[in-house]
Picture 1: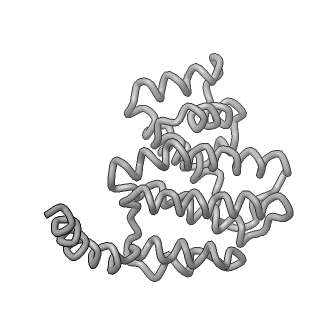
Picture 2: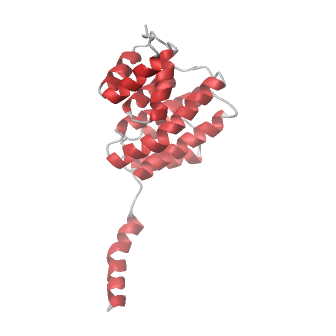
Picture 3: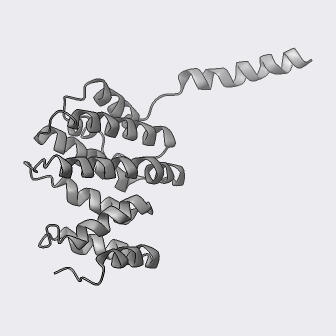
Length: 193
């Protein structure tokens, strides 16, 4: 009887496991990870509106960010900056709680590392993508203390204080009193201009 029930489960469930397909986002990320010298935007533009719906997709985003971070140890160019920007924008599309949690816990620390590496190596932005401001916006959207600390640091240093995106970033942060307080604490009494 026990062997019959195991056989029944295998016959019923195995075909679903065998034919489970990757999402378009997973396919795009896997394709780019195999060829990280390319522009990920070309892969993402094949999709209408990419959404991060699963922890598996989050893991691939983190793997792609690790690839970028590793590449940045040797060089930085407009393509690298564009790839950082595109990967960062995916954080805005998390539509499932598990995906957002994964991005908060694993992805935000990687973005913080990438931003810190970019600044420590004094890599300058060459394209119009402005990946730093996009990363700061994402830090405001999530609840990662590392991301909020980095955001506060940039606010405190008057980073690109004329940039229009600051109003968006601070508006997002103001939706959560805890986030807003964290950022204000980091200002040490200094109001950004």
